[in-house]
Image 1 (tube, one colour):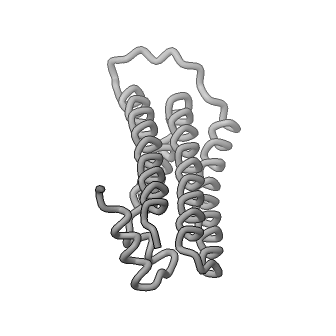
Image 2 (tube, one colour; image 1 turned 90 degrees about the vertical axis):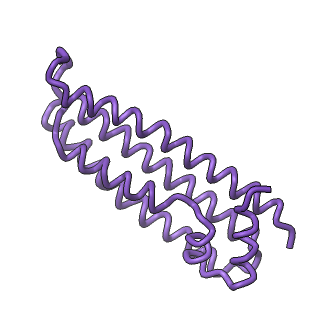
Length: 162
């Protein structure tokens, strides 16, 4: 089997996940520093109790939802025989998962900026855990998709620099 299409998909997915993480981290970091700084004048309108609670519940349900959706999509790879089809499914599922996590990071940033509830920081920390656990790697892909030994080697070869 040709590894070039797999390499392209793997590199595109890896690049996408890093870009999403590089956008999410500074946004929350700036909001967190703004929130914890005692010297900055905070003339922001307060977030209502309902909206604050909604953002917390929405973020928490997105965290749970991304996990469930990702694993349900990965289960569809078990019935596939073609490695390229499996990698495409994995790539799409990973990109969707990272978009869910990005949305969590935006919701928690907005919630912390206007509401100041520490639960937003905890939810962002959980999103960071999922960001790090979800980053594509050859071993993770092989384990999640339950690949055979020769398919594992093709994934490893595709992940190496050209």
